[in-house]
Image: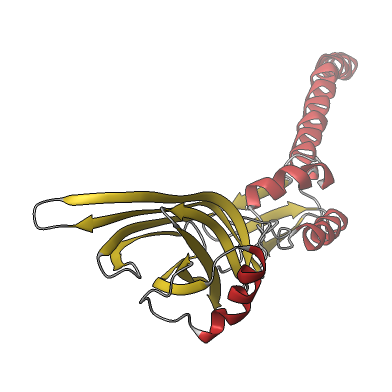
Length: 274
């Protein structure tokens, strides 16, 4: 009986041996799976970086290759709090931190447009002179025009130079214009005139010269007439139409025109208001 019992035990042991081996293999597999599940997180550290100058989302796109790539390693941007949360190995954290220090800097300043100059206002002085060979009764010329009249006497064949009227107007140097008109008595008491002066000033733009004013158009017209009790008799028209540049404070003889037996002379000077 003892021999039979021993054989029976041996048979049962042999039958259970494969099951025991299978169970041990399954246990080892489960242990490896459990270890694989957590090995990626072994040694991970976490850190939150404050971003001051850049968009966290843009930085994460640049920093992504600096991570370990292990399962569980993260780079999370937060635009509301301007932060990047990193979870990775310490060496990767250190690399990412150095990169953030280099990248999170203020953007280069945008190129600024050159400032346009501040254009001053200008005052325009226009003097209308009448030159004739008679004495006349016009107003004497102002002393400031003495040098101009001296030059005119050397150029034109007239004996008398008298001031008919003067026009003073202020305008802007940028897109400025002048439009003036009026009436004035001619040196002969029986004769009168009406005049109109139109001036357009060039916009200086970037080629601004503070010492010079460019007049793109100057038109002066004068009509002489004699008024009687029943009608007005025209005695002629004078017209000066030109363009020129005038330096600040310079007196310029713009032009002359005939009015019957007289000459109409237009003298211009300007003054910049600093």
